[in-house]
Image (cartoon, rainbow, N blue to C red; front, side, top):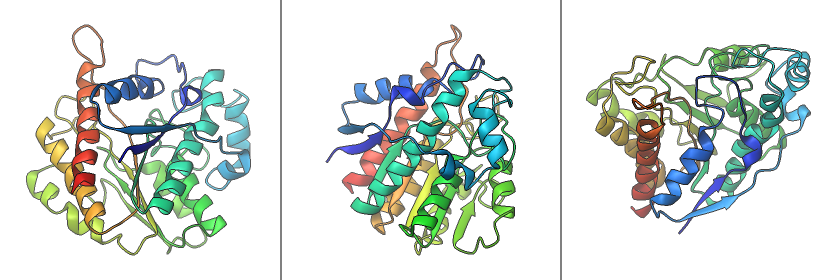
Length: 280
């Protein structure tokens, strides 16, 4: 069965940054198709401003969309603003698909976990994970939502948004602060962490690869450990029929020629882990 992937060229941006985050979805998708793992491509519907307001201050959202407030790349490039509705829309549409199929859906977007209520940083302009969680809750498509953020650093932006919610008891959020993933022992404990979210209607997982030992973020996992990390998470979700959305998250590696080959290899392994988990 083909894995649904919510992607459109409209979620790409020229961020005028050394970071590949804003444009890597295109390269990742091309690399994924080369693996000949069956994928079903679907274009996401753009999220409107009202949905983005659920997680962010309205003046921040409006300012970024107009190019008047700096985005998460530290500039005001209009293409970043144009991409934002599609970034959030990809995760939200993937969540709807996962809820319907009771399985996995992919939203190949870059990191969003460092976008807070009224600011963006570290390549994160809007927090698509929190926008999706709050949109699902508001529409009653989900009563409980889980987030597993496998990024190297704690999700300060997500924490900022969650702290402002009048009631966050329905939202379970795990990140580097509460779910360290730096060793074989940590990886072996991941199934228990996923099962903590088994009562959630859907789990959103940001499968960042900046935890790799060669990433500038200072990770300490090797390639095989990252693969096992993803396999543990995805395999547990599959075994317990937990609907899950997977995003790309952070990762910065390039080869000596500046190409994204090392980064693409890591994201390829995430897809391989997904395919293996779904195959049982």
